[in-house]
Image 1 (cartoon, rainbow, N blue to C red):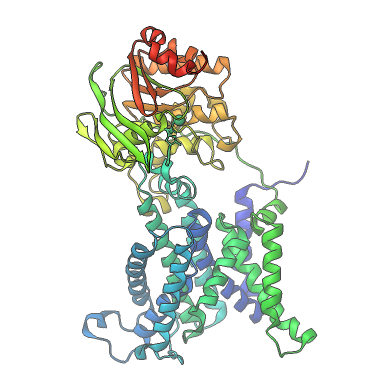
Image 2 (cartoon, rainbow, N blue to C red):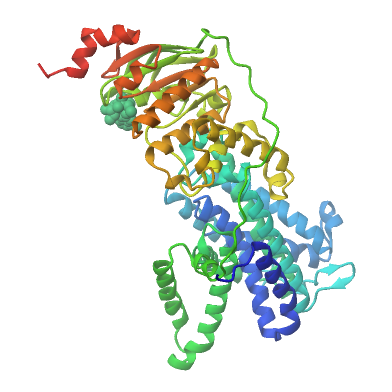
Length: 599
Ligand code: ADP
Ligand code: MG
């Protein structure tokens, strides 16, 4: 059998190598490792922001600059203004001040740019990246283009880190700490919300996630990582000028994150390492072949980037990881106390009411004066031919879309115009006709997203693993719902590997994890085999027995008729019939709608 290591063994070996490196390596390599550590800090922020959150930023170098210049000014100024005098001279206080300033700038810049969509966001980051760069170069207190010199070394309990070998340990301690906290964060409630940003915004919001907040969170975290790197950089170099904070360096940081493997914490380190070494190597070797005249390294560098991105789309980390075969521990669902549940409404109580709901898309009236009521403890089917407006109606009811006119009441409250995440909190959950899940995440994690709104622990506890009690309860709840819908055998499979029918069932489990009293299911039986349909029918009946209200869109008449209490039939956006399954089936208007044109 091939030799395999446990993740812990690999980690210990890595830490030992990191600790020993400066003792055995020549000065030159220690310096190189220092730069790699500094760059990897910034790239790590971009892994979170770009690789995982899908928000591209070219402007990170400017945040590095804020960290560097703040400490440069505070530790070199002869006399600081009175309100800052307390911070004078101490690099550690300057770090704190730098982080606060960075957070404020990131909040401001983020609130202006994060709302931009598509290509406008990267363009926005270029704009503020350039602005800050020029600000560094023109402000007199910052030394203009010559910069500031005489920055003191950082001291730890009187030990001055004035040599490369010394500050090495601080740089790498920062980096490892940042990697540790980032990894923890991603593996948490907050992290699942972040991972839902890239491709799962509508779903995330419908599950109670505030996606604008999550975007801001990763933007600020990425900026803070950059600022910490800048602080270390300033005290390593002992001087700063604007050059390393310009746009082209911002682009390089992005390259590092992408080349390393944009969705991977270790990718930041690999990317920073490869690009730093490659640049160094090109700068040393190219002049020997082509003479010192041209900037050939830029061209060769560009070509190599394209090759790497072309050959290893997942980034280099995926290749490195394959070299070290790991022995995976068996994964288990944590055992934990059940989460609290909301009180269910009384059986028979009207909990959802749509009044004259109309939704126009340009000239098309997808919903036209729709009225319907759903009671606790009943299954109501919404049926009708394709394009009748059923999914549109679901979107109006669940707050994914807002009606052009009319109103919707849920548990006696007007919810028209409310965000879908707020409606979800009131106890309405839904599945989607076109399945919306995060294919690379496990079934367990996907279902745990449904339980998001039942937890409350934020970024800091997650980063330091202080939320394990709540997290275990959320995961245990997810596992319970997975078991309930019959997917237990797939708990740790990637959601994307399930058959389509199973993915629909996963969505039901995810909905259930939010502790709803109303479930909206858009074509849950599509793609299911007969046996699976029967199991689904049994599950829905059981939920109804517990007092749950279920509103169901379905095409399969046999499935619907044997299951539901009442039926509402739609055609061309309007309600054309309503009643018991038997009545509706015999209704001439309904027969006409379904068989219309067939003589
Ligand atoms: P159903 O779910 O009953 O098959 P839908 O609600 O999906 O029907 O669609 C009803 C009509 O509204 C269709 O003609 C569809 O093309 C249109 N429609 C749905 N969503 C949109 C949208 N976002 N923009 C424009 N037209 C839409
Ligand atoms: Mg539909």
